[in-house]
Image (cartoon, rainbow, N blue to C red; front, top):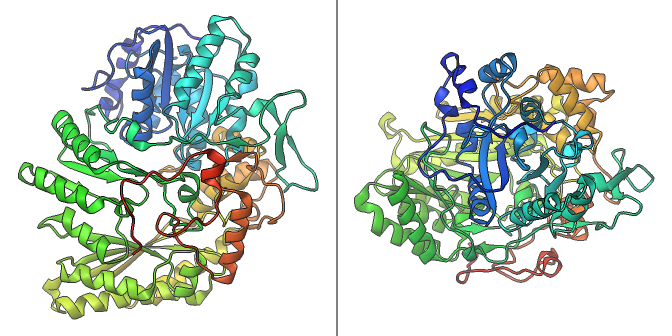
Length: 627
């Protein structure tokens, strides 16, 4: 039964005296949309706590787009922390929206952000707390239409039974269209099933209930999704792609939070998409083509946002900010405008070349803290396998330029468990770090006060859907641990600090990245056993996931580490970011041969298929140059 829409903050307020950070649950932040009296109500729900979800740029974009549409109102909700969740259940208080403290279950549309695979148990926790049935098929005619979108939709089959509809790709225009379809269907008193059929006709929208899962000789053990007999839905759902970034709102962040958040800075999206073609990178394949925001728009939005919101830092966000054709012009102008205001400009990562270091110097000003580079692999051979297109000479030159420019601390990102990796490649990580450290000492000096240091962070490869590595198995848990120990033992200098990602967390992520709809039973069982906030290291319970897998007759290590046949139909083949499967297969073969592929924004078309299939093209503000 759909809950009544009314303000229930008084019930929540009575519980806030007993919880950590009660300010998480206060409404009326500066810049929030106060007028929520529209006839059709949408709630965007981020399945994590406020300080993690509030700065999410995608959520801000959608919040602004829906509230700007006539006849639609949009509110936000976040999952409370465990202390308040337990109190709310004990006191019969449902999950509420932030703006009006209305029950989430009273909204017409509830939209989840799928930020990463480890949020899946939090999705069930949020729905249960909201009193919305967990499965789409269990919802009544007047229950909210529950939809999802975000960067982790590209194998959505393990959570497909939860959602009425899933949006693939860019959401600014598509979510508004989806809401209008639901509004018109409800106004015409159409049944829920017919509304879902109408949603399936919106480009980029996948409706799981209209597809069956078939297990046959063409598929893996997880089956393949095909349209149900009699349903007029596409065999392959293509993503939605915004043609030009400069036509979108350059300043979607308009809300000032009451408490510090995880990325407490003004974020300006300077470009969308990346075509460098790293073969492990899902975002690089699924966000194509590249669309740049013009320099003047970026600078104007930054200045406007800083004036309105009061931040002391502006971040130029994207997958590859220093690839922007007008990056230097943007940084020069921003620094000229902001230098006297004490505002810092930051970019999320640097290219491994002199330009990257120059741009880092541009934003650092007189401050020289740590500088971050991502070689990804410890040997040239393995960097060619992953298509990193970076040489040892590039690494040395970038490090030397950085040390000469005043940096003393270097952070290097690597991956472990990459296809074809050997122990020698793992030892290459230690050698690369030692070489960079020695280079710094030779240029800066060896005295203790020089404080030259190198920190190494090593992630575990999680093979992701719609990448050339989607067919690879993850390195088995025992092998990962052995190689992590091998790397630690190879480090001979205390000025090199090595840390690595938890192999057990990465294994669960890999399992959820490659299963089909059967994965929902695993997620449900893990949640019932108390798994939630799995992305929080102090909350993650590997034993709970192992027990859940055992109850479902599954083996986590076997699922994660088993390669998938290159000619099989995969559980996610019915959804597409526009990159052709043939291109991914070609890149998988080239990886095994150690052949690299150039960035098509700097050379010629490499044949991924995105532009002709989606009817879009790169939208560059100027000419790009290879490093």
